[in-house]
Length: 409
Image (cartoon, rainbow, N blue to C red; front, side, top):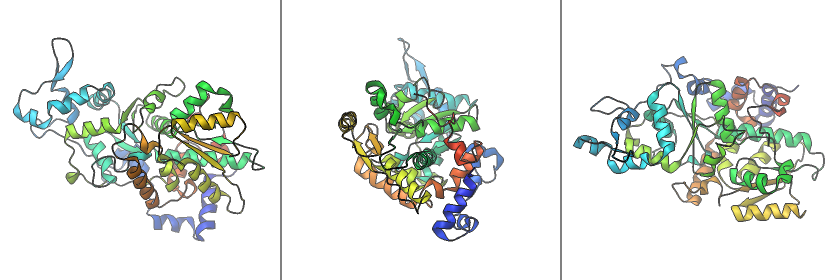
């Protein structure tokens, strides 16, 4: 049985000729980084939570917001801003945007009640979607709103990439013997499930990174309230599907979160930097087209540098191309062994609720990936640490039907 500690040491020593401990020291690896996300009270002197308070009332933003709404004569919730200061601070127009979204209201209500820690699960496409000076400030912004913490879904894209690479390595004997398809885009998976269920044999038994993130948080923090934040409307539907609805309580789009931040007057100039480097380059490129297949290929090369396992990928970019790829597969015209379908042009960065141009977003994501101190999940000590926290210590255990990472179609 090959443990992940052994695999990590083997990969690091093979790629750097250094001992893993010296590599971790050079990378600035801090085992408390995950602890501060899931158990911040354990190190209160190191990991401080930021809160947004009304300067006049001393209340949190969620308290202040709910204290300034009322029902009109028809029963509809409307802003109640009797003071000029409140009108200037909250603003009826901004409040109406939040009141129009039942999902926003559910999240703010959960934060206000305070009986469950609320976590933001941020999609890999988040780079530069918000007017923040740095990506590290986004975590601080969520804490200021009253979230317990922010978890990058890229870390779980890492874990699922590792799982698929290991499965690919185990199953493929000859180049044409095994075919996988990506499972992160709900539009792509829905097209296969509903119209072409016979093709599900090519879909790995893996949940999407969003679901893996939500399930992990709830396993480590059983009473957690999980909020996925991304550019995709289809994720709202995915989160409610019967077999995986245990993972994410609410899905907010980037636009909905931007509306909250504008109403709360989150000021980037006054936000402290709260940096956590949890994900590898491979996990971060999930947000762009071709990213998933490239992540698996990168990981396989790191896993088997002496073995030529080729991921011959074909990518479908947008709904029309996804349909065409499925048709070609049915006709036996596909020679690839990895099929990657993205319902939005350009990948998740092209989602309908993204805030910036998809090409600009794609470039930002690629730049962010290059900045990661880890190239693949096999180089990422936080992957090993997270799996250990979940009781998964070996390759064989990860490849088993782990409930947390497995979907039964």
